[in-house]
Image (cartoon, rainbow, N blue to C red):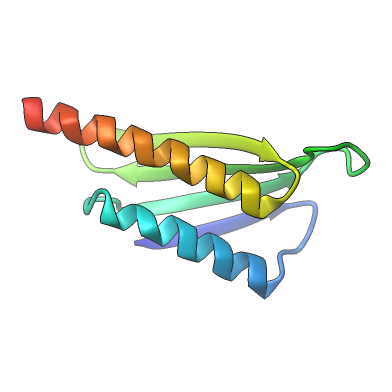
Length: 100
């Protein structure tokens, strides 16, 4: 699976990129057909709490894509929450495929 990481108004360090890659790659264990994933990391008003946003859009065959957007204190936490949300969406998608 190809993973594209975009950071808006800041540059990501290697540690964050590695973390995001590791987390998003785990989605492959839940569904084999993932084509690619696009991760967008944003900072909202730097002085506010919970100002980090992680948006993940994964492309899957026949359905187009699944999307999750989560906000938290750190990019790691926001990415974790978004990956969990996508994991649930993939489970529902797989159940729909099985029932057809």
